[in-house]
Length: 126
Image (cartoon, rainbow, N blue to C red; front, side, top):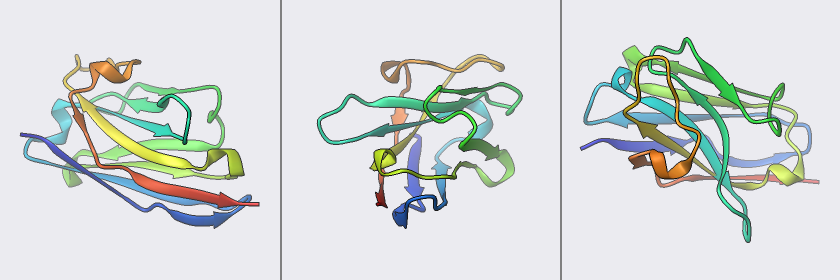
């Protein structure tokens, strides 16, 4: 059974940065593509970024491209999301998810990911 634990969220001022971590346990991380989603109150869950099993393919949504960076360290069984130039509209609960994809693939829909973390709150003050 795969378990994911996010950390690194918190309160930051406009323009600030955070680095979120997603620790995977139970299986080797290299067997899964990893994605980061977020969900703000009253809004649908939104895919932000995804990274393939080896890290060779990366996807970003238009809303975060150029500000957020996804990465992974398979030796550490950990994925990361670097959040820069944060704005109040980035306030949400951020989730990581793992999916058993082909080597260079990622999923683009939340229902395709099998495993989810509990989420970490990011709050950006104005």
